Image (cartoon, rainbow, N blue to C red; front, side):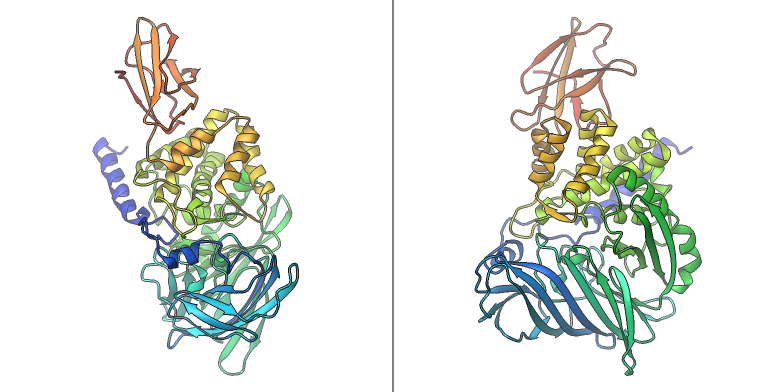
Amino acid sequence: MMSVTGKMGYRLAVIFFMFFILKGVLFAQPLSKTHSFTHADTLRGSIGPGRDWWDVLKYDLHIKFNITDQTISGYNTIQYRVLKKGEQMQIDLQEPMQIDSCPGAVFTRDGNAFFLNRLPEQKPQTVNTITIYFHGRPVVAKKPPWDGGLVWAKDAAKNPWVSIACQGLGASVWFPCKDHQYDKADSAEMHITCPDTLTAVGNGRFKGKTDNKDGTATYDWLVTSPVSNYCLIPYIGKYAHFQDVYKGEKGDLDLDYWVLPENLEKAKTQFKDVGRMLKAFEYWFGPYPFYEDGYKLVDAPYLGMEHQSDIAYGNGYKNGYRGKDLSGSGWGLKWDFIIVHESGHEWFGNNITARDIADMWIHEGFTNYSETLFTEYYYGKDAGDAYCYGTRALIRNDIPVTGTYGVNQEGSGDMYDKAGNMLQTIRQIINEDETFRTILRGLNKTFYHQTVTAKQVEEFISREAKIDFSKVFEQYLHTVMVPVLEYQIKNSTLSYRWTNCVKDFNMPLKVSIKKNKYIAIYPTETMQTLKVHGMGAKNLKAKGDYYITTRHSIN
């Protein structure tokens, strides 16, 4: 048994460790939290006149990786539908990458955005294509996945090992695209050319390999489901491959694993968590959203990322988060954090995608809570609760969870643990786990393969629960205040109210009047009273499921 000081030291170590990790969001690259936004921020984060008239249907990306000089070159053919009359097309490609040509158009550059002009007449509801040739030496990631860009690494045998991490920074760091989350491509092809001694792994299904007879080979991959730009990721390395099949809610799901040869035997053992994950998450969230494209884990030269059907794995074949339990509860060491967390994003992030990254809690809050649900599914409710409560030590309440809209700005890293604990609170208010599970499954069915706003998600939860959660969302997502239940017990009368809360905050609560016996109360900002008996002045206790604080003091 760990001593009190040992537990405290462990928790402080975890918090110290996570201060650096979560300071800029656990896996997404952190973006500036400044409130001084630039013209470039608006171009990147808004749905402006260069974007709003066309809808991406398909990316057909042909790209060559020149490992010796760390450059890339190729072309991207974009198929799109014209929604309304438009004159300029905004294509994003970050410096120092360059567009070489775009047949049928002329272009000008404005920082990380190119504007294509003199396009042929764009008739509404027609489907057109445009091909963009490009090259350059992309930004290199300094500390992936938290700092984005190309990753030019070597494995233990000194073979090239190449990939990209670009969530937050954006896919335009390496290829020309419409770099905004609101517009997923309906499908995508990736044709990846690399040295013929290596293997290139991409999203979706492998469609074939071409030997170019010049020391290179091209690997073709096809994604048939809607996909976000930042999820389209190649991995290039000396890979070994093995397969499995999961018999899930929609039938047989192909599981493919691409790992470095020295990791092959370890992977065959560690990746058994994939089947456990799928069983738990299909129970809670509904069918895996990408049966058509399969499921892959790929050894990556960084910790991990939720690339759709193509998940990056770099957790060192250890349980927990690189062998650590972020919750401090002990339960996080029962499973592989990267497999569970990043796969949770297949439902929340890849299936349901926030239209604006200001609402990234839709990705990270639900996925954070998926860790609790996984733990509960296999180890019981008490274990899941202990895991969830443990993560509260990581909440900073520095700035609101929701960022600023239209300027490509995320909110606080609390989008993970605070938003996850908000969902735990909502679940407690609903007080019916089958209803809560139906809501989670309903979200994934209703918004299947779609982009959404926070308002859509919030209204769906309130409607299906038949409870107005608008003030709960406002409190936890738009402020840094943790609601305080102030109370006093005098002459067998309990007096109570909410403080440190938004106007008209009215979250119901369960409190104990005796050990393990709870009653429901309905606090507001106005003082309320309730006759109670056998209740000492210091023994009021709110259920731990709620993310609140209590104070025995009313002035």
